Image 1: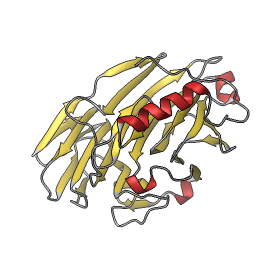
Image 2: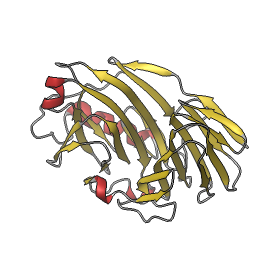
Image 3: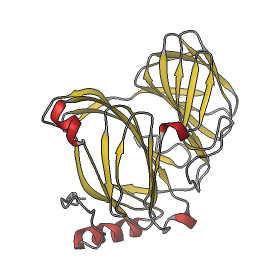
Length: 285
């Protein structure tokens, strides 16, 4: 069975945002508990994205750009520019703080911004791991190339490609580009699978899926994606890891852990981000 739903757009400080996970009735795909699609949007000169320093626990973030640039800074001391085709992976573990901002050149000149960000919940064994960050150049992102097919594995293992980044929960996140009339085999490598159509239109096992639609696959069988026009699709898969609490920027196995992290941030006990001394306030609960 395949369930297809629209992902409505909302405004995030002037940016068009579509959040496919979590939503009512769909909390996760395997350990993937958060999926945001921002843009595409033209950002005017003199303006930009300013996500102030904020904390995370119990998850890994995976960030990918189609267009634009983001300057990542974190409490481990990294200051890294993310460009299209590259991947930023960050493990929060017991606690990390980071910011995401438009780099100076793009802020001065204006630019087009189009990005994806996913969160992968940590296993119980890795929830208190040391925080870590890896920037993966485009040349090191695992890739499957065939006529009319270009697939890049952003995180996890799948599609006959080994993981290029650390992972402790079985999953895969991949971006697939299909030329018109091309077919792709979406094998049942995981018990939970889904896809999101970034642009274009595809036929999924006989069911049409258009841009900004999210499809959840229930049957554990191979299905075929047929492009009805040039299309970009995000493929997700994973194995469930048990119930997870998610509030604000925290993911944990219990509400008590979320409460403890919130109190730590309120007290100022998380580490600072070198070079970025602003601070995102704790939202009301």
